[in-house]
Amino acid sequence: MKKQELFAGLKVVELAGVLAGPAVGMFFAELGATVLKVENPSNNGDVTRSWLLETEEKNKQSGYYSSVNYHKNVLWADLTLQEDIQNVLNHIAQADVVIANFRRSSAQKMGLDADALRKKYPKLIYAQISGYGVNDETPAFDVVLQAEAGFMYMNGEKEGVAVKMPIAIIDILAAHQLKEAILIALYQRSISGQGASLHVSLYNAALASLANQATNYLMGGITPQRMGSLHPNIAPYGETFYSRDGKGIVLAVGNDKQFASLCNCLNLDALSANVLYGTNTERVKNRDGLSVVLANAFAAFESEMLLPLLKKNNVPCGDIRSMPEVLDNESAQKLVLTETLPDGQITKRMATAVFDMY
Image (cartoon, rainbow, N blue to C red; front, side, top):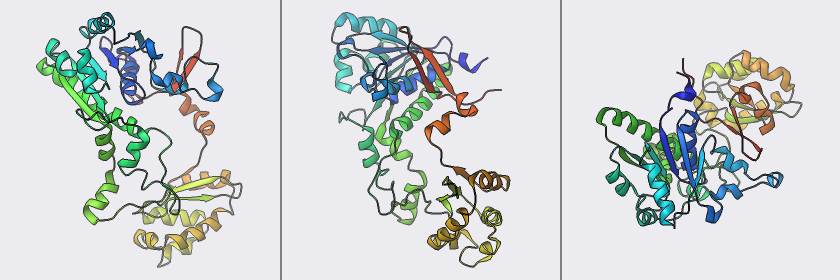
């Protein structure tokens, strides 16, 4: 079976807007499910339709909206009107999954909450995203969550201000959590015949993704500080150096063998034997001095010569690429999904279901 047919016959009703919920819906659409996206005509639908960049003003659909709304069928429904609610309910009666990000009180008022729908349709999987909890109706925005969950505090240069990541990373993390929950619920339903009520909050998804930074605090009492792209436990890891032609190259040297290979490529063999830099522990302690030496060495090479040399010798590194440089290569182009709208507008986005099946 082709990957694009895995969920053929599955019906998903998407009662969600902006990014997290629609990203979940798009995942299933990519894998062949029929995804019905409900949008309200009285406010021009999903708010991201209006988030047009200056270069997109001629378009009817923004790049932001397009990024997570591929291969979906749109149902325009004003959920203040009982007949439109009934139309949505008719579709839900035939659905396998509902994805929602309504406030609980709003969903209950319309009869579109998990309890009401699961009572009617016990096989239904109701998957809800909230900001802070199913009973907390505080509005949630990605930048606020990045601040409250510690991402901004530890992101940025050492002497700089706190900054957010340039994508709505918390929404994307929550979307992945909800996808996993839905897949588990579908599996369980195949055994029991019963659906499930699922919930993921943006806040919990953010906290769950703190990984080693949270553990460094929980186990060692270390509060992560802003250190740019540097790694608190490894060096040189995250350090960026510039070649003679001005190309930025970032290192991810994780062990002593890799460091020795780096030194050999840079004609600095004596450096790996230096007591200040011979082990990772010492390199972390003395990373400032090490960076000065490496910066001078990188500046003596052209990137076209140095990058292949480093990679050939298994030194983990990469050149810092702009978006055109990222997307204009063959590998990236294979992941671009193109869709032509009824008005002729061509929309493009990156695939989200990027696993391979053999």
